[in-house]
Length: 378
View (cartoon, rainbow, N blue to C red):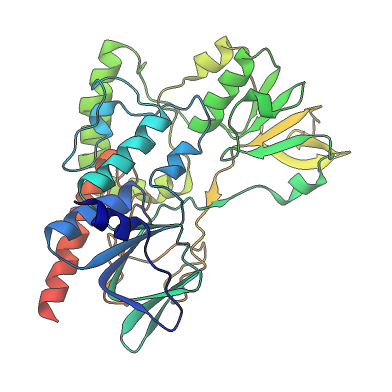
């Protein structure tokens, strides 16, 4: 690609609302799901654009906490068509993942439009219309390539904590220097909560982790046998092949998986205890400006990190496809009542691995194959 073409791609002229931008397909979301969809759309020769709110490809990963490493080894962190540039059994940093996604988009010349936050998706006169920061996009088909985790979820009573208590959602946490001196309550005992708690405990603070156990894998991932079991049994077979909507076990497990956090993968309960982290019950209220546990005890925490997850955040979809939880109704990513509308990247879209890096490419290929067959029949 020559310099003139690159400048045209990355410094496009502004469009007005009166000048809709027309494509065969619009992909909403430029993370690993959107880029995987883009790879297959490019191979099929379709005219498409990928809209992403971030200023730079990979920014969702760049903004995670400083010490974060992926929970899966590098051999499972590659998208279709491009190996991950790290030793297969190493656990990449979040910066490495961000840079990989940016390099992936560049290598396959994927038309990502950064800084474009979608404000609404609706259907008019037989086509999909997308409004985004004064720009309008029109397409026959749309792929929403985003996960379930878009809007920070914190309890309403968080506002009742004393103003002196430093509060951060897990998505805002970067390192211990953000916190004031004193103890820390980590509300939420999933993977993020456990790893942040251990980091804070190692900084010399008193740390509580609140909430019920999410369970844990039955082996130590850092060991040789642990990595072998993780690769061959858990990720490649159980999550990718066994737990799918096509198997009886997968159909039975799916409702529970959609409601509950993923079991601890790299961190174990023994690691928390070894670091001096205290396990306590769920945080249920605030009293006298301090968090209160389900047993009625009050914690004198100077800081609270809410590892309480996210809500779906799909209210910008102005179509009658969302259920009572705000999640889209679909059949393995295909929305039957709205032809041409698809989803990729949702938790357990097709299998337990659907929202994981190593599983998203399979869903992207399947969805783009369906999309292309529909276009052929138009």
